[in-house]
Image 1 (tube, rainbow, N blue to C red):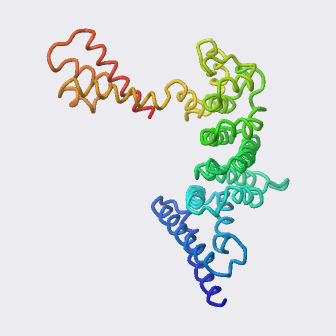
Image 2 (image 1 turned 180 degrees about the horizontal axis):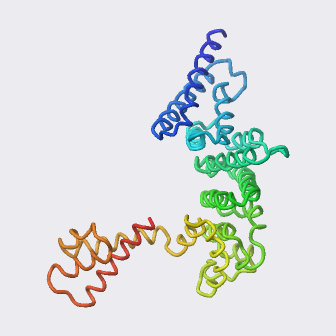
Length: 347
């Protein structure tokens, strides 16, 4: 017993030394601290599980403390704390199966509580902490790996937390919606409809022209995930074509939400990323880039030499080398170079 206690105390001291480094402004120090912390916790949990000291308790004291402190640390505005603690929490969830998504949600709800007394910067820090903790859970890919029943219940709790964070402060609407879009992309369509849609539906009232920018973000993510027939049932006020919200007839309706997104200037609002995913799917962009690269590579040494130039310069250099070419050939080469540049930008 005393040997186990001494080991636990020694390990606890080792674990504690990593938390300060997680908040470092130096990226390498944060990465090293996170890696060392996960390794130490993995060892501590393995030793704990191998002894009779567990007594039915699933987590060793060090791991239990680390989970609580990592979640709480995401509310800290100190230096690089949110980046370091967030990265460590992602890796912890991914590395240790015993740290379940349900446990993280419980810690978020109990450790990062919003009380009526919280005002100003304190309230903002708690909300940011909740947002970063939810993002860490989504990016660990643990929710999507859960059995169907647990996945559905966890996704419902997680999406409700995210929508609540976005509803608390206007400046958190976009990032909360962005994390919700990430969640939607990882889940099965049936889980999205059953668990995420009920929390998102209030953000999509009436016609598309009246939606907010972050509401449009969510709708575009939902449209790519759900079957067209189900989407048409959930959004009867919208005209869909081939299961898509985006088509020639709907373009005027997009104007108001996209104009409202200009408030994020000079940074581009996240709704544009979702929109570009519809206009130029990642698979299609990769295929276009490959085809353009093949066309340029097959046009001779001049095309390869022009690879470091811009699209127009590359096409001009290509059109000018390797003998005379017809107008049609030059046009095709220019288009290939432009497509390659665009695909590289969007990838």
